[in-house]
Length: 273
View: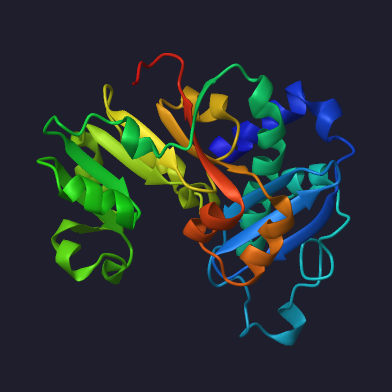
């Protein structure tokens, strides 16, 4: 899986960078979560809903590692190696990987476009079959204004505005429609909920693939090894505002208003404008 592959590469190639890192601070917000590591780096991820299990029996309640009041000060290696699975751990792990990757990106040698959305790098003058995993409102509006054929995979049909409801396809139907797509745009939250691997495995050769969103900042080489062409990543520009934005229910568009910048990381084997 992509997350395990990322952890393995970091451990093999960057062990000295991460071996002593700890989680210095954390915020689990309604929509986004953020971490600060002991080297001063910051990372983000979408927050998975249902992180608190209110109905478990008292004897089954979890007070172990990576539960409230047990996160700050933990070793990053402990988080990357834990076998514990929960929504909080999934969110924390991606945010932490994004923090580490943000330090490695400047020296990676990959081509980076600043202040760009991945959709801006697509040639929408052609008539393509486009599948979007996740209802990116701005993307839907932009693509809907073209002659391209759009389908949006979502778990909740209400995520699409009423005027675009005809684009909706149930998320479980991804194996039926992704193989025929010429362009696939995938939300980075699929990294957090562990569905990205299955989505990428359904894509056929020659399809242009984008993974985008604040959760998508993991090591580019891992996604590129899985035939991703463009990563719509996020660069934190005002870390002092990140935690307050996340804590006050901020979503991705709030991040870009107050404390972050959109960047696109390009697969070297591809040519774009």
